[in-house]
Structures are given as structure tokens and as C-alpha cells.
Length: 553
Image (cartoon, rainbow, N blue to C red; front, side, top):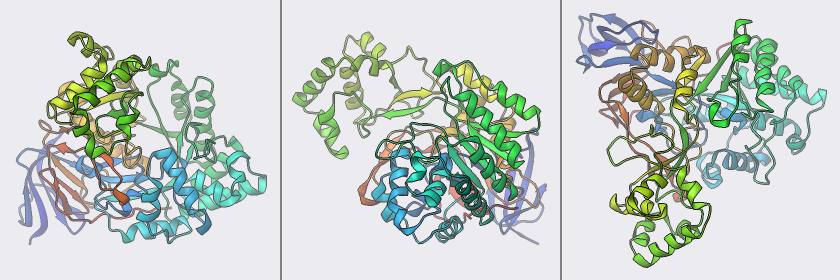
């Protein structure tokens, strides 16, 4: 007897938190069929030779809802061991959608998540109305990895209320209809419902997106319908000292009303000078509420480089130049001098420079510099203005230098404390969103390289459990997240001594020539999705065996 594929002599880290152990894994079709010592040969074999063999990682916070239409490889997360991605976060989705409302939903996604509307409107077929029909469309795109989606509050409210849903709260009759549409979406395959409480998530006209200020009655009604079909409730709370208490309390009200799982975006609060409010979550969980938080395990923030627009505020002339022509422009001494003088004349330049951290010139970017190790400090040491230092480092690297401007999870001790809570899972990379400003999608590689290998603060077994078994529990995926016979063969073979991120770069591969940030990885010998190899030695094979994972009532 032979197997379709056998992974030989790996160090199996099974996703349960158990210590690694040596062994083989046999796969037939899309399923693990044997583990331990596998005697029979495989039609295909992968020699792990002591490398870690883990379940595929699950990314609980992405916005790949549009990108899947033109990038079925779902980069960059498929370079970082992710085999299942959750779409539809933050209350913004493309379904349900009446034909006349397509532009509204595309523009809402653009202003909230920085995904160009032209790419959204032309890169997707828009041949659906219900959320179930949207999932049917995703299925036809044959993605490289598995995707599962939530229906968004903004889309549901607009579907039921139209423009009134932006500024007005619904009537009791409309609450009933909103809840029914949400519940039907989960019944049709959505794995849950997402809502947003962050007022900064705005429409093109500056108003907050529909549902931002929804009252508890509306959210509880939705939770009852979503929970009736085993759906997840996802929330983005507002970390404001006057709002966060109410928003965390709403998590409990949803959990009690629906009797189901609740997920929210959680961050350390020292950055925002707020006393830690998360005892509320601890108390709710102790009272039986199944609430989880997802956080990025490093500072999240903006990327400043020549091909993004995150640089000195006074540099409007540089922003106006095509990104592929900027290097030649700054090589001209006269233009460079003009940029330096503009920065010197702008009082905002110094605070901006104090917020920037150079990510170094090694292959691996440095995300761990303390706040005082910033661009202004580099400039002071060199006797330069920060604008001169920025330009010098960019020129010395032929345009490749990268700077990071963190704005959340900036306090490393607080991030470590946050991640120690047993209800927190890593993620929040926002893959597919903020494509010209932010690149946090390499978080799995950072977790393994920094927290596990460099710091020894998290064991390999626990890091893998958080990214796999624990994340699968949040989504209630019963056949993924751990390695065992009968489980689906979503698997990584990785080198714990080598795995890490590479520097963010800019590519121009969106429709209409739009650009975006991406980030490669190193140390991944193989990634399998549903039993097929999609990544080998950090490069895609071209295989696209991913599936749309639908709710399972």
C-alpha cells in the first residue's frame, strides 16, 4: 500500500500545545491518514529531517475580500504559513448587496481599508446579491488557501435601511430584518457577523460607516440570529477611555444573547494611556461567555519608504511623482535640496521623525527598536536634519530602505503581558487592507522568530497552538488546526532556526496598475493546503487547492 504523500522524519508540533515529537505523517487525498512511524511509501515524499511539522496557520483578521479576485495566491500571507484566512472583518463586506449599491460598498471598503475602488469594482464579477452567492463566487476563483467569511454590519444595514442606516438607528421592525438577514447569511455559509465601533472607519463623505453607533438592542438581536446558526460575532472596539468600557460590555451582551463565540480586536492600552480594561473580559469569561481577542504580536503601524506616501508631510512634490520614478528624482541634488529645505521649514518634520524607526539594512527587518532609537536620534548622531538622514539611507540602499511608524502595540512588555492571556490569539495583520500604508501580514514569522527563538518567551509548542488549534476553536473548525489522523492536511514544514520576515517591498500588481506593499518570508520548507503543496522552499508552486469553508450549524 502507498500513500499520496508522506512527510518523513519531522519534529511534529501538533497544535494542541503538546511537546514536539519525532515522526512521519501520511496523507491521502486531503486528509491525514497516519502518523508516527509510517512504513508505506508515498507517491510523493517530503524529507523534513528534523524540521518542525505543524498545522497550517489560521489568520483571524484579513480583508482579502477583494484581492482574492485577482490574486488567488492570497499573498503575502501564503508566504507566511497561513492556510486559512478569515475575511469580512470590521463590518465591511461586499454582500449582501443590491445591484444599485455596489459602488457604495466598494467606496466604503476603499476609505476604511485603503483598497482602491477601481480595483474592487473591476477585479470582482459582482454577480451576487446574498452572502451565500458571494461565497459561491469565491469558490469559483479557486484560491491557493482556504478562506472563510463573515457578513458585515455595514453591508447588512445598508441592504435593509439604505442611506438612513448611516446616521439613524433602525426601528424595531428594521432591527428584526437586519437580524434575519445576518442569520440567513450565516445559514448560507458565512462563519459569522462582523461589526465596527471605531468612529475613524469612515465613508468618503467623512461619516462613520453604518452600524458604528449601533445600540445594544440591535447587536443582541443580531447575536441571537447568528448564534442560532453557530455563527461568530466579531467586533472592533474603540480604545478610547470614554468608549472602551461600553464596547467591552457589549461583547458580553452579544455572547449572552446568542450563546455563541465572540471575537474582538484587542491591543495593549499603555500606548493609548488607558488603564487596562481587560479584566472585564476575564470576568465575562469566568461567567461563561466565550470571548476571544486577536492581536498582532509586534508593533503595528505605517511603512515609510520611497514608494509609499508615508514620509515627511512637506514633501508634496515627491508624492506627486510616479513611484517608479522617485529614485531618479531624489538622485538629483537640486531636488534633494528642495526636499530638505521644505522639511526644515515644516515644524511637523521633527515629531514625524521621532515616530520613525529605521528597520536596518540586514535581510531581516528590525521591529523591536525602542522609541528613542528613532530617525531624529540617527540624524542627531550624524549631525544632519532627519530629512537628510532619510534621503541618505534611501539612496545608499538604491531606494530599498524601510522605516516603520508604529501606532499600536508599541509597548513590548505590555504586548507580552497581553499575549499571556489564554483568550488572546495572534493575528490582526489586516492582510489585503491598507495596501499602500501598512504591512503587518508577516506576524506569524515574527512570532516564531522573535518571541520563540530570540526571546524564548513563548515555547514553540505554545506559539503553534495559538496560531492553529486555538484559532480553529474561535472559528469552530473541527477538522483543522491540529495534526491527527482524520484531520484535513493543512500543514507547514518549517525551520524554527531560520523562519523570519523579509523587508516590506512595493509591487504593482493590482488592477489598473495600482501598487501595494508585500512582505516575503524565509524558513518555510513546505506548506500544504488540503494535502497539496502550495509552497516549497519559500516559493509558490502554483497549486490552488484552497476551499471556501462555510459555517457548520
